[in-house]
Length: 205
Image 1 (cartoon, rainbow, N blue to C red):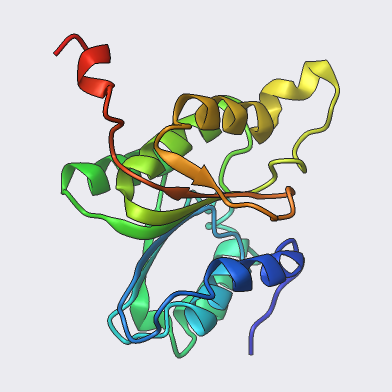
Image 2: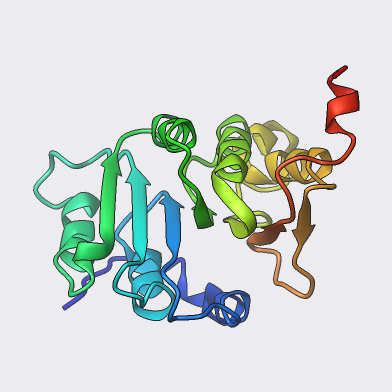
């Protein structure tokens, strides 16, 4: 039986059901989750989206308390790895930069990336840029805490994902589509293409 000590995900389920409503369960999918905590969102994806037996979920987290007896790492293992879906999960204990960079270098591509790791703006921007590189055209990218980060105080803005998401969506606006009608606690976007038509000219090529 799954055991969780907090629930920061369930309010997102109606929006996620809409985002994934057109996905064909008969087609295997690849997903990456940056920041897995106790596994609540991972388990939902496995039960509701990644239903094909050949689908794969990569969970990336530092699991900072993994050496403690009562840790979110131990709860993640019990909730996800020891579930009936555990065979579809590949866990990377470490930093998102290392995993995403390796994923890109290997030429792998994902259908979905969920960015919910570090909330520092610099880290979020790095995760979003690398996640975009990991996605197939048409792939879905969701960043958590767009309007639910550190708050509006100016001294806290570098600890909020919002300024990173705003910078990313401004720079990549010709390569992605922000999904309309969504609640903005998170921000969901769809990748349109890897490079814009004018990229070669802008690089002097």
